[in-house]
Every structure is written in C-alpha cells, then in structure tokens.
Image 1: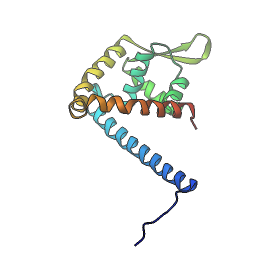
Image 2: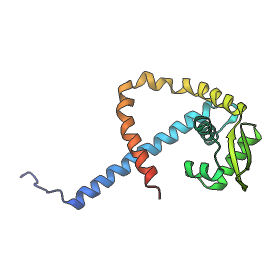
Image 3: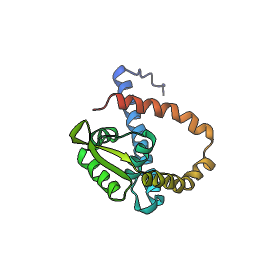
Length: 160
C-alpha cells in the first residue's frame, strides 16, 4: 500500500488547532475543579473557595474595592459578589462602607480579623498542596507558568 500524501489545508489546521485549544481548556477546567475541591476540604471555619478568593484578593490588593469592581475582577454577577461579601461581612472578615465620593456606592475593605483569617487559610492550604512539590519538579512549574500567564493575560484583555 502506498503512503498517504495528504496535504494539511489551512481549514484542517484551524480545526486541529481548535481541537487542541478545546482539549487545553478542558484540562484546565478539570484541574480547576480538582484544585477547588482540594482547597475547600482544608479551608478553616467553613470558608468556601469563593470567599477565600475574595478575601485573599483584598489582602493582596490592599485597597478598597467596590462590589461591582470585585464582580468584574472575578467574572461573576453583582448578585453573586454581593452574596459572597455579605457572608464575609457577617463573619467580620470584611467591612462594607458607604463610598464617601458617591453616597449610593459602597466600598469593601478587609478587616484585621479578615487578614488573620487569610493567613490561617494559607497555612491550612499549604500542606494539602505540598505533595505537588514532591511529585512534580520545580522545573515543571517553571515551564508551565509562562504559558499560563500568557493565556490569562490574553483572556483578561479579550473578555467577552
């Protein structure tokens, strides 16, 4: 039998590239689900991954954020963010105050208790991810990070 001399057309290349991109994001989605589950199993005091994400963001950002700005940053509805913020506020982890520049708006900031909780979360999470450091070489992470950062920046700049 003669070997096939199929020529890859631009349309075929686009379909193959599209399939690879879909497979790439399928893997990322599965990894996100598994990591979220692992995270939520060890977060202290019943904190959810979403609540920890917002709390950690506020600690790292070190600034007051409007609920709408937080919702946009996390790509969730304003209602979902309001729900998360109310739960954090009820626990004393964030403070929601009136925006002095716009009496109708609100500003969210992390409280000292929230900062302590964030540290407590980071301490609790570390051991559950330590096995990754044992099972994967540092170089594996170093190799993957630039592509992931590039993809995040692209998707962030090209939000739908």
